[in-house]
Structure formats: structure tokens, C-alpha cells
Length: 108
Image 1 (tube, rainbow, N blue to C red):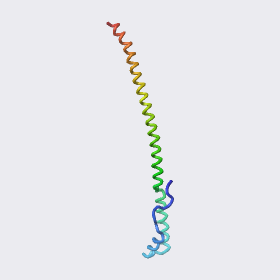
Image 2: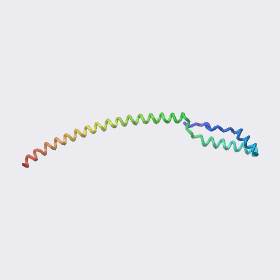
Image 3: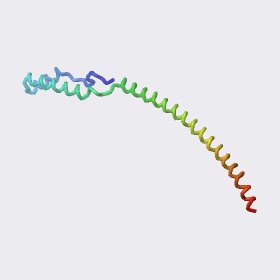
């Protein structure tokens, strides 16, 4: 998924030549160039490419779509439960009236 090539352009030959011009021995300049190239490669090894980011964004959109579908389904279930609760309230209200009215009449 991650880029295996070094995305940073590093010209080792030019680096070695600049070091040699400044007085660094050739063998030491080559060793420094190699070490720097390896360090840059290691540091940038886990950088995501634009393609990686596009792929990740597509995966996120897919997950978002599935979650939205599940949320919609849950909204429907909650609405159905609300309707059942309202029905139960009315049934309990009528039962209370049927029980309370005769009780009040018996007190009078």
C-alpha cells in the first residue's frame, strides 16, 4: 500500500562531487552519500502516495455508505418502536379508565 521508491530526488553523484570539491576525501564522500541516501529512503518509506490516499478515501466512502444504511435502518426500527409505545400508552389509558371509572362510581 505504501510507496517503496524514494520520493525525494537525491543525486548521490552530485553530492559526492560537492563534498570532494570542499575537501572531503572521495571514500568518505561516497560513504556519506550512501548513508544519506539510505536515511532518506528509510524516512520516506512509509509515506502514502496520492493513489494510496485515493484508495483510502474510497474505502472511507464505502464504510460511510454502509453506516448511513445501518443508521437509516435503525431510524426505521426506532420509529416502529415509538409507534408501538404510543399504542401501548393508549391501551393502558383505556384500561385505567375502565378500572377507575367504576371504582369512582362505587365511592359515590
